[in-house]
Image 1 (cartoon, rainbow, N blue to C red):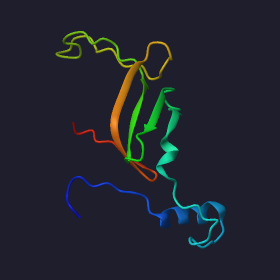
Image 2 (image 1 turned 90 degrees about the vertical axis):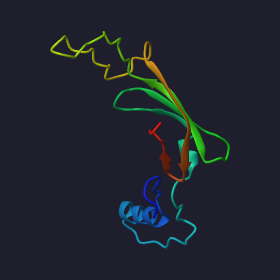
Image 3 (image 1 turned 30 degrees about the vertical axis):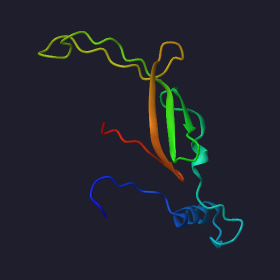
Image 4 (image 1 turned 180 degrees about the vertical axis):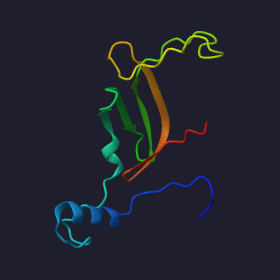
Length: 124
């Protein structure tokens, strides 16, 4: 393996083991009733973050193995200059949840999708 820019994708054998554990039945991974791992198409749609209540949309970009993600994030309040420094007043904290009215927006283009994996490069 090369150090650095690596990523992992779930193997079909892992999906088969999950089927065995959840259904408590031994089956052959080569049988037609074994669906295998999910494909990237499961990510194409609208999702709700149950912790924050924020909505995210993920759209696959053709068959390129890429997707774009956009949606809402909790509102980040205006930060006064010098807040939190040298014992001055504390910085305003971001909201914990989305309200649906004054949320901030987020967008990430060109994330990598393959099978049941999504890879986002946050290094830039």
